[in-house]
Length: 422
Image (cartoon, rainbow, N blue to C red; front, side, top):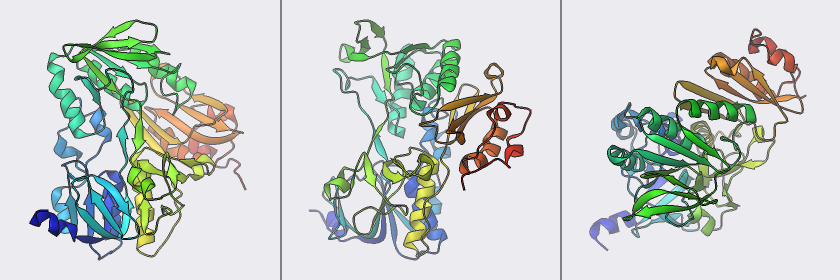
């Protein structure tokens, strides 16, 4: 062990935050805002200090926003607030009894309170050829830098996955003049996060922009030529030619060290309404935190969003500083594709009715999701007023006449007197 490693082995922080994304950054920021005076460090796998991930598949990939503008806070911010950045370190083990974590290089770091905000890793293809040169994910700056470096010699690109990441990447690559094929295994895009009407709208939009969008497309393997991607073979034997493949099939929660240490969970690490795990002095926030969300009827859920990461981090900071408050934030999301801005409030999973508000052909409309008559979510396309005014209907699970919801001449704020749950 070198002298530097010995120094690192005895380092300890009052609050150690694992993960340098939105959740980790917000946890540190909120602690200082709440006048926490103890030592704080953020441990991140990547070499960069905390930066925004959502623009990676949009403005950054398009070359419209330099990396410096993705930083959540400038470097001086962290120095001034005495938050130490331990970059390029991957935590592989947690010892909850000793209050110590271990990095992949064997370094150990002690903690008083541990905030796990490690997010997740891009899910890889399990088929043959999934690790070929030219197969990429969109999760980190390094991922997108690799894609950008290869675009000059690339004409045809296959995007596997019709979720937000896949569709956003397809929109950008199409605007860059590439021939894009999107392969979605289900019978519609955005099937996990939206209703049929929104799926059909975005399918039509991508096709209108020249994307070869294929539904029910099951991938068999990635074809190779000279060690690089040559195409994607589908289950029926057809090959979609491509010099690059972008995989957008979700993430796996980065919680292995916590589960190995005995934390409750599985698809994420289980936390209570304050973000506390089953292990002493260990908290979890963001993409990796399996929590009973009140907008999912109290069912355990992982939410992959900036809002969830930031709001959960603020709740944990309150608990650590002695003013506990349960997590009860309305989920919201957004996506940019072409000239379309999609804003979502609430969770539409399990809805039993969709009310289309406005004409999708106008490219400015909303979809209101109902469950047993209650408003549970809205998808708003180029309709910011609906998004802003619809929040109250979602948070109160209001009951509103569907005919009135469907009338764009009636402002949603005028429906504020709707019935609610007692």
